[in-house]
Length: 194
Image (cartoon, rainbow, N blue to C red; front, side, top):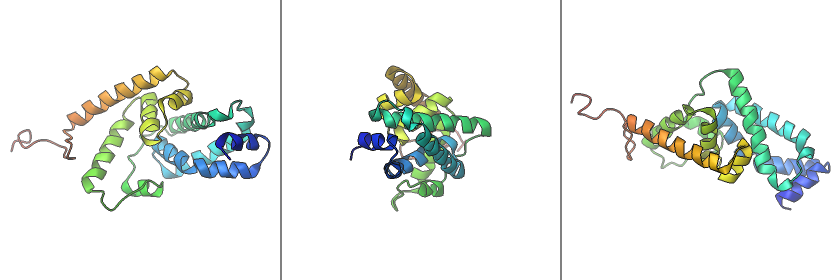
């Protein structure tokens, strides 16, 4: 059964189909919620609330093929609302946090790769909300430009522009931190007076 048939069955009251849909989207939804909120407990609550709202409102979805962007729009907007209410800086996820939300962690990952990832994520969190969400949906949740446009309620050109501007901003930020391809950051020996 494809996803569109699954949605139609859910709209006709099939609870088992909704359970299947939940299992299909749970891990990615949790990862997206965690990236937006920066907190494991908040992310779990957000995903639960989003699926409850999804179940209550899925009957209003006219085109079953548009479920994915519809659901992510719901999740992202609820996440924005929740983080606005918290009014706090979203913390950088730690190595352990990433393991808990199901991201693959291999034994070969080095300390520098983890440190670089944390620095990059920290810089992403400094972006304006819509740019940050666009970057997170594109690179971390692996949504297409078209899907992000549907989620964000904007044109595909706007998504591309936000990605381009964000990449430039992040590149400049990382260069200011002296991050090199090998993962080194900080002052050079000359700048440190050595």
